[in-house]
Image (cartoon, helix red, strand yellow):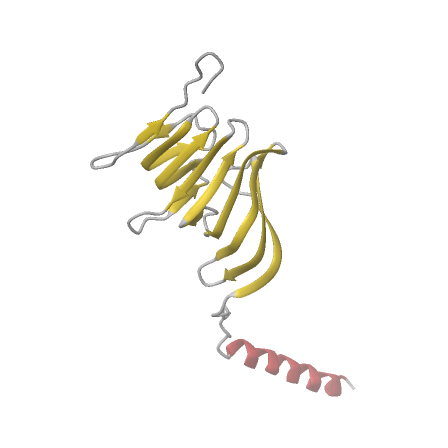
Amino acid sequence: MLRLALIPFALVVAALVLLAVLPGRENVVPGGAVELEDVVVTLYPRTDPDAVWYFATPHAEYVPSTQEATLHSVEDGRRTVAGETDFTLHSSQVTIDRSENLRGDEMRAHLVDDDLDLLMQARAGRQVLIDQRNGRFEVPRAIMSGPDLGESVFEDMRISFDFTDFESGGPGTVGYAQFMVDVNGEN
């Protein structure tokens, strides 16, 4: 009886040894993009743990090989800190890279507390970058406007999310500003 039990046991052990010796299968990452419709994306950046980003988009693509997600026609994008929206974001296309940074050719941000609009545009092959690690916008060309500001144009702008650290220009860049002055209650 013991001999009869050892035969199936030996066959199982031999099969396991054979499976262990055979070359293993490689995990294959799908080559194509994963496409989603009517998506709400929530982003919790590791490098900005107090912030939460929300995006609503009718179409999104995720490419596993590059670990990038592209959101199309973003009309309801926003960054919140402690549950409060500090700025909104709109764009025809935004890519979220593997470092959780956002990039695109044109983005519109509205800074809620300052009531400022910021049109960010790509230029000379450089895209707009929203850098999560450094908490800033890096913009080749920016047009900033607001009720008390008028309109200002900046090139090669780097500005923190809270607008406390601002740098613009460099060799060969041009910037101009138009200010509205209130004189006796008239603009």
